[in-house]
Length: 345
Image (cartoon, rainbow, N blue to C red; front, side, top):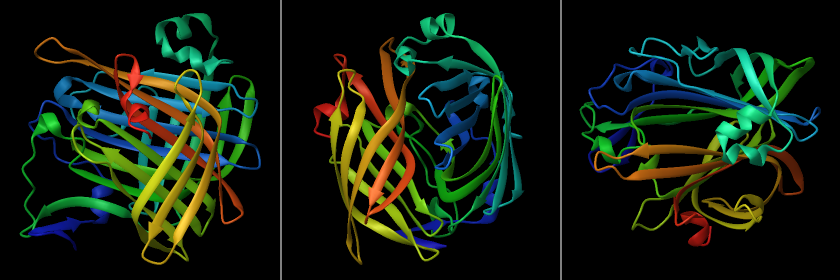
């Protein structure tokens, strides 16, 4: 265990790649996420599966960025009353070797969007665009150490959390190489690309965070980054992340981002400055293809809350090297304006 603060240590063990005991919190969530971007074929994708058994459901999301700018997307909430496996909505995740090798399989449908912006109205988008069969088989192997873990008390006991304010109890990330096949309709692609995976568990509401900017990127097998800037309502933004160099992670101590938005308030280009103990990094990002998504929740008091998440396949440049990854912008939306944009991010 590593020190994480006064009286708190960070637990990071291979066993945490498996499922965790179900907690009593109504909003208990356990999820895994993977992305991969194949620069040779200019195709990418991300995949998320979650269990929310105390709410009686799971969550499955599959998103494929095709080379011509079209996006294939599907979301499902399959019935789920246990936390025994990641298997639902046509997607299954298998831990082949913890912290080293996982596999993702999907058999289902995708809504094929020539204009991904139509997903601002999911009902209309699914009605007016073709639904095609999809088959995905990908193996993800770590190219980095694991990052993160679960903050626990010095004696190993869990930290007490306010479930209604929580986003995760434990969270790990790892840069990866993904290989396999993606089939969308009658098109098939052999995939060999780089990406990132994460795993979260514990109580979660998407509205627990005011806004964040999450930028996972890969330039090569031994040069990658994850830059994160997160803000809770009424607090100052917190920056963090890591840089992969020579097989080891170097922690990011500070970061800033300047974003150019389009008329739909979606990121188009941005500049990132990140600082480690060793040096400073200047990164530029150019969004190649983007889909806007949302999460809605009604509070016990009857208030309707709406979280917007824009997911962009992004071309990155740093130190003269070109790479690929994702730019994920999460915002609560107040008076039709994403709050992070309003605050200058």
